[in-house]
Image (cartoon, rainbow, N blue to C red; front, side, top):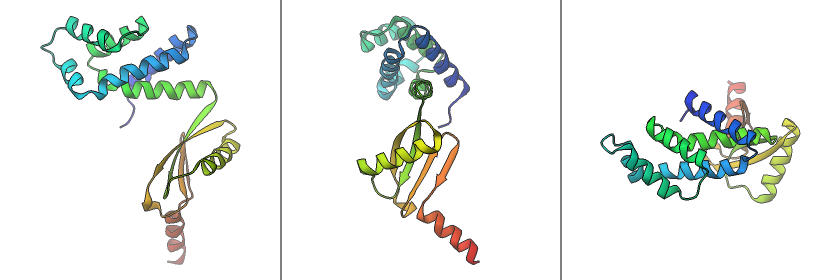
Length: 175
């Protein structure tokens, strides 16, 4: 699902507040808790029901979240009042991306035909670090359709080293 402008704005605002207060990790944890609320379909349906008073929704959120930063609790209330609690997971993900950028860490979405072991992950990570000049975390998925090799996406860059792509290229050059 594409990230909306409002998700980016919420994440950016939270990141700036966290950076100013030097509470980057605390906010990361708090956003994770808020995002967890949306995974409970019954709770999400309850919060989206316009017939339930706001005070009851806020009380439920306060009880479920437990000990949480008051500003993070206010963010949860704001998201509920605006009907955007469903975006909490994306806000947490975007915040994570901003935090990683701040710390000089990139994330590589890597798809392989078979699961990577730790040695292969480390080798790929080092290779991508040389390409980007930044620390790179590997987020790996398995897709047997690529036959072999890997496909990696780092920000807007795509590296397609899959056997399927090489076969397609060979097929076009022979035709």
